[in-house]
Image (cartoon, rainbow, N blue to C red; front, side, top):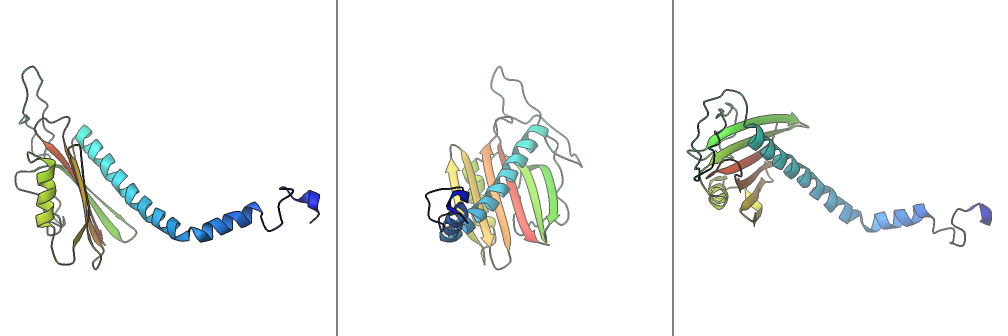
Length: 194
C-alpha cells in the first residue's frame, strides 16, 4: 500500500483504527463480560419496574375478586378504589416466593423463553417497604439461596435472592404507593428453569 493510499497519513501501518480497536477490546474483554452481565440484570430490573408502573396504573388482570376503597384518605382527598384482586395460578412457585397474608394481588403474568419461566407478580400490602423486604429475607428458602443485593433508597427497597445450584432467582421491589394511600406496591420477579 502506498503511503498516500492510507487514510491516516503519518501513523505507522500497525496503528490502524482496526488494530487500535482490537487492542482495546482484548485489554477490556473481562470488562465487556462484566458489563454484559450488568446489562442483563438492568434489562430485567427495567422490565420489573415497568411492570410495576403498568400494574399500578392499570390495576391488574383477569379473575377479578372485587375492588374496594380501603385506602386511607386524608380530609379533602378523593378515595381511589383499589384494583380488583386476582388469583395466583396453580403453578405459582409459592415455596420460593410466598405472598404474605393480607396482601392484595393485583397482577400476575408469566413468560416462558429460552428454557426459563419468568413470573411477574404485583401486589399491595399495608406493610412498609422495609418490612416487605424483611419478610422475604426470612421467607426465601435458606438452603442454597443467598441474598445477592439489597438496596434501600427514599422509601423504596429492592432485593435479589439467587440459588446458583438450581438456577433460580427472586427479585423483590417494594415502594410506597403514590396512588393508593397507606399501601406499599410490591413487584416480584421469579425466574426458574422450565
